[in-house]
Amino acid sequence: MRRATYTETRTTYGEVGATQAPDLMQYPPSGFTPAEYRTRVGHGDARFEAAWIATMTWQIQRRSGIEVRVDDVPPLEEGQYSPVTFDENGAPVDAAHWTRSADEARFAPDGTPLLTAGTTATLTIEAYGRKVEAPVRVVYVIDEPKRKGFAYGTLDGHPESGEESWIVDQTDDGSVWLSIRSFSRPSSLRWKLVEPFMKRTQALYTRRYLRSLSIAEPGPEPETDLDAAAITAAEAPETAPEDPTLRRLDD
Image (cartoon, rainbow, N blue to C red):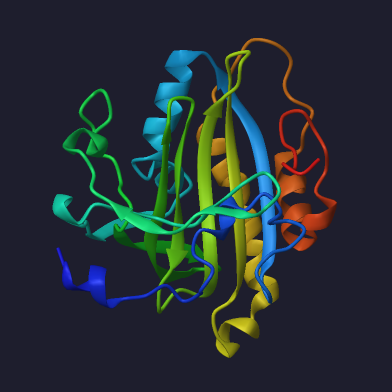
């Protein structure tokens, strides 16, 4: 592992942790396009555990056809980075800080190693017959009893600049949900020139993400057209359709 990259590389944007801001969709970081999705992926405690473990072991990405190569994992003594947090009105309530992590924070109940804040990885994404490498760093981890997930930020060499988060939560009725939030823009003029193609690729992978944790459940098929919803939201996030199985968080 290249531990030197952990301390020497920086994200390609300054608003680390902004995917946690309650008003992200209304007031995204200047120059960035925000997006937000929420979909139901099952019900019950066992389903919640399976979903968050999959999320915290890169399975959302891998199940969506993305190759994940972990390049660097920070040593235990370096702890985890916690970005600034916000209250429900969008005001910052806790400054960014480092905390030392206990050994058990690195493993799921079944012993599966979990990703941790500070981990760097290279994602290989295939689009239009070409493979593109996209370096990222995990910038924060959510570890609450009924809410777990992470966000990564882009590093030099990524086609985009920005941040994306995947959070699994279980509501009081036992339903398990996956929420995806992001803000992004092309990382350079080269990528700006092919932005329409990038948006289509984002739409493709967004609908794969939304399906990656889903399981078949009794009852009628959901009426949501995930393909159309993801494409519409990618092209115009402010008009994403409202639906009980796929909806905007700010509705």
